Structures are given as C-alpha cells and as structure tokens.
Amino acid sequence: MKTEVKTSNAPEPIGPFSQAVVAGNMVFVSAQLAKNTTTNKMVMDNIEAETKQVMENIRAILKEADVDFTNVVKSSIFLKDMQHYAKVNEVYSSYFNAPYPARETIQVGALPMYVNIEISVIALKK
Picture (cartoon, rainbow, N blue to C red):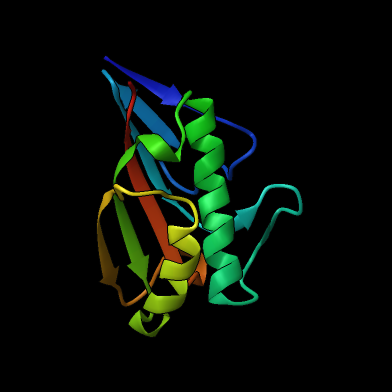
C-alpha cells in the first residue's frame, strides 16, 4: 500500500508524479526544484541559493510525512554542471549530521525548467 504526501509548502509537481509517497516505513520524495512557494518564482540567483531552496522544499515534504533530515538514508543529486559540486556540498551538508545518507551526484545535460540542480531523497520512518 502506498500513500501520497502533499503539502502546499513545497511546489506542486510539474508532471504526473507525487511530491512524495509513503510505502510501508519508507518515504520517497520526488526530485525537487528551487521554486519558492511564497513568491511562486524559481530561485536561481546562484547555485547556493538554488540548493538551499531545493533543500527547504524537501524539508517541507519530509515534515508533512512526519520525518526530517535525520531520517534520510539516500539522496540523489542531479547537477547541470559538476563545477558546482563543492558549493552544493557546502549547502547540502548543513542539513545533515553524520552518519550522512548514501548519495550519488550525477551531471546531466538538462533539467526541467532549465534549473541547475534537482535533489530527491528516501527517508526511513522509525
């Protein structure tokens, strides 16, 4: 059985997918973009601001699922330019404590809405 997670504190999906789905004790958060739900605009001033907004959107979805970043066991980062790797790590790491989630970072040719970064996570409900 799976249950949809939906919050107005994170962007609406731009396709046929849920913000997140809970299946058993796992929370699967779809990859998030840097859309600010207050201004309804993309945050693309720089990679740090964009990453922060992505992480805040993930935080809102995790909260709606009754978990937080301490529950995240896996993340996937998709970058348009691997030159941003170190700056993304600075922001990303501020949301976690050791032990850090397992992760991959992949450079891609393009992302939806011409963004520079997209992040998805999987969390474990305790």
